[in-house]
Image (cartoon, rainbow, N blue to C red; front, top):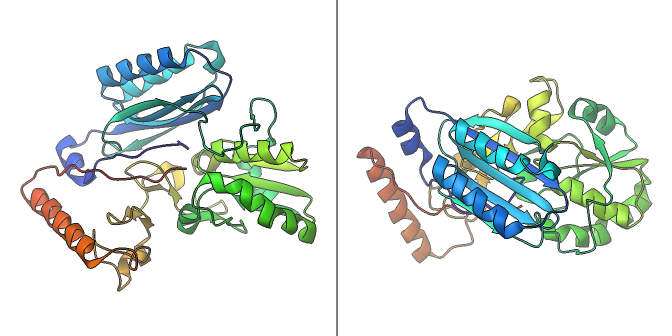
Length: 333
């Protein structure tokens, strides 16, 4: 989602994958900026459907629209999407669909928020104005032009896992920091480089769409954004032919996806919840469940001892063929 405010997932998905055998779970990531009302009624309907069909994940509702990522049996996910699209205003709601070998979330949550993706600038309204949408198959030509300034609107840990050739990393920890980066860095950079256009992207399209709305409101011109985000790009562009390097972080227990939206190879550090690449896991600082390159200096010995104990409990549960469920924090967009 893109989504997205997801904060609880299966702590050890391999256990559930074993118990589920060949079962696959449909994952749907979706959003739409549209003026909505009756949010409390919508929230209750979605909660009932999710409970009846064992759909899990998170859906955010706000007066500016809807944003969510859910996972579950195919029929259940499609029933939930059908409920959303039953409102004419959401009739054309697009969902990026992919498959996972295990359930990506621990439970279902639906919440009413001020924003479906938090920027913290109330006057920004993507329902009124946004930048120019660019289809995935036209994206590489746009960003390959040297007069285009390419901006990754995601968080720095997502950028580190994978991004497009030549993209700029705003080095943000949350999307709410983007407006400050525009003032401190982007405006001076525009003066220095004088690009003909801006090209912005994110995971599923929601952050870059809102970012373009913000820039257009400030008077920026030539603002473009990747329609459907990286997820749609990885789905549409032929493997080995694109300019996206690495893997795309996703806000569920798969951690990352790659071409054709197949599950990636990244894992989460259970100590700091940061995504880890293969080389991060091979680093001398890495101890599974205890520390990684991102958090080696963050925790006390006492906390690391607790982490190690928990990791041992997970290993014991796995040996017994039992699922060890726990709270896994997935970072916000």
